[in-house]
Length: 327
Image 1 (cartoon, rainbow, N blue to C red):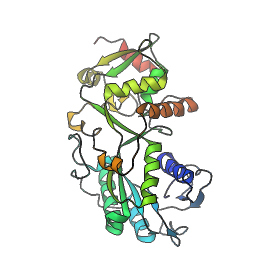
Image 2 (image 1 turned 45 degrees about the vertical axis):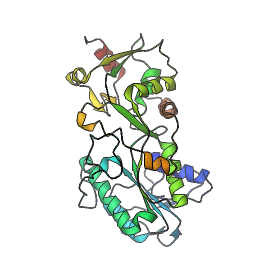
Image 3 (image 1 turned 90 degrees about the horizontal axis):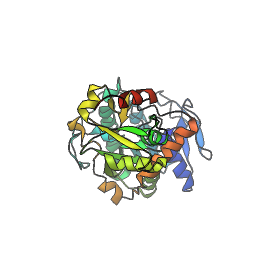
Image 4 (image 1 turned 180 degrees about the vertical axis):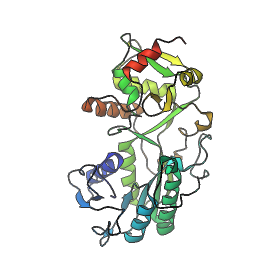
């Protein structure tokens, strides 16, 4: 495992250990330790000798989550592996409007260079990484895992945690919760545990190819029901106050993620296909998805354990201000 101390990387290590595998993690050691039971090798992938601690051994499989083409180029060149699973992203696609997009969808131009200079280059950087891995290992010995929005335990972004948190901890004494009207908008969230288990599965069985490793697309309203279920909030103790896109934009509510946002809401029609990609190939290759409420429940437990609200979303004060405004 190239990584293994946080979120998806840590979940992959945990899943591999649970399946009885011997796991070695290469990390710099700056983001925390690795799960008990894994062997920890320190190394900086940006350094010329960063892979020295692992490059002399033959590996059954390598799992890589990097976004830096330079790092991926070095590991693809230096590591001897029967299988290479690279965790990419749905952000590689140039088409964000088409629902049901498959792995054949058009991609963004690749990044020329070894590292991103800004997050605007995230998709192109992952395209470049994909090309490096496929050129070195081919479609049979490489798995390109185009992950979508990942949520659940350890999601520090707060994107999967805000809605169950808000239903569990309403800002309004009367239990009102501000939600986007969002007709036609979907939510596509994959539990980090399900994704990790599947990555281990494809590595175990040498399943190569390119896959949209995403959750099932559900209407936004259905996702809110799942979040309420995870929070233990039924229809009698919470009132949804809906506002349309124009109203939310006019009152400076941000879409998707981050402070001051309504997470998972997208207000641009050109992005309605982003949370509605096809996962048929991945499910045919063994991806199993748990109910969305379980993912929200795990995300809520993560934030409750930390004793702090998710990083994404409206503060209590800001939501109360918005709820007090006329529709």
